[in-house]
Length: 383
Image (cartoon, helix red, strand yellow):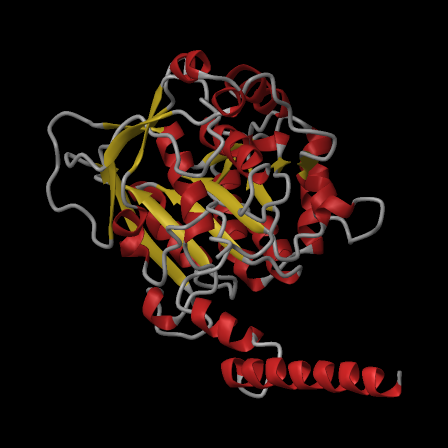
């Protein structure tokens, strides 16, 4: 019995030693071999960092983007939390407009119990009573295409805005304050492109990135404002100047169960503005722009380096690209892969129809610089 036990123990020790030696060779000093596995995957961009998307405003573009972000948050590989909209009724935001869009265009969806937050609540000091006001590691989306007038008809709203503005007052907000005073002296309502109170609050609470949609008329103001902050930002400017942003009448989302995107018309990104203008204004759809901005936030890097930003200052990290309709056909038709096609048969697949998606994400997003994740939402091979 003693010899049998000795033989079993010796055999186990020899096998264990052999296995550890193999792992040591594969993984260097780390005997688990994980270091080699990780180094082999380092060349490919990993999944996005976990973040909560926050939309500022309820424009048609923002509302559609909310629905697309909400859908993406339910899919594997995005690491997105459920989105939230910051609503400022003094500039015309409406929570009911958001709910109407989600209900009618995203298959009876809604914003959820914590999907909306008044700007006054956002600007209050952080507390457990309003956990949504914590913007740490959040990614914010702004519609800066059109200046908005801040209504002075509601005395209560004006007084509240003045009070909450003082909580996050900074040198960066002086430009807006001065312009507001000039307009007030002229008897005009104050107009804003991006609310500096939200920017100050977001920076102080540690947000990860800002994504701004701009037009040629607002681009300079957006650049001057964003370059004063340390938060990395991406500006997508609609180009050429006469291009009109508009929603598609009667559009509803096909709600694909993947992250390949759904587009109506081909689009193009460029680091330089177009030098030619069209005598007839072109249209670019809000739904296509929203899809593109969603993909930019998930497929491109959020921490920018100097060679990816337009500024030379290390603290100024703003990248700018121009978005225009494209004559090149970069889209391809694919069968829609929604819930019903995944659970049903051929009839369900036929009923779901076809959708147009981007054939090469790396090529489309290359002007943004850095690595582009073209494996977004694809589960790794278990081999």
